[in-house]
Length: 270
Image 1: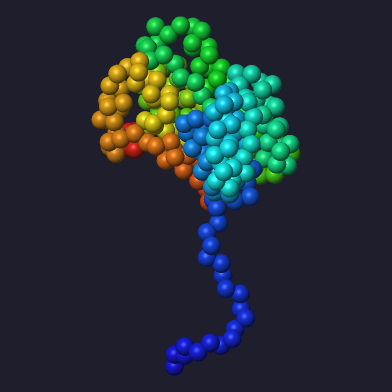
Image 2 (image 1 turned 180 degrees about the vertical axis):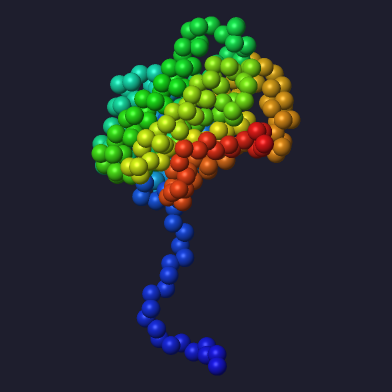
């Protein structure tokens, strides 16, 4: 017999309120002044993280930080040059000073290269690309893992790679080579620190609507249309679409994912 009367039960009602993907996490983000990094900072804060934004350009960092705070999020910023080891270590240490610990990190900062064939790239440009895009993530991961170990004990790191690391990259050969090396560092770190409960993954974005893409289009008119023609979804990504993948990998919902390079490329490498 079905009864619809109130039984007066005092049993607790399970909460259906959604919990943020990164609730109660402290997150450190490089390259956070613009593009994917800025989108990630906004998203991570909306998902409950306390965020520290790092990049070279203070005015951009300040603007994004103030935007996050105005929306009710917790954020601060620190100037950081990925080519300067002391600057990288100081930026990571600042997260611990501000928030008491470090749980997750998104190593997104990068620099581009002139879109030229390998034999036409000046040596100074090659050295700069490798210093920022390979040595930078190595420095950052080393500092971040030390901070996670000393405070939260367990955590996660995501590095930004590129679909250009997964195939020939005749337009951006040094950039592609540096990002392929980041994939290797990611796998090695995942194997090394997994036993401690520290996960390390990478994302490989495809064509994404960032300032770096705008600069490439300005130097090689028509390149975006060409890239989109080779993408099954037929368009470039919004930076937030890339940030969403990083947020998931950093969250506890990806608790059994480590050592992977996740393509977020609209099917370009399918």
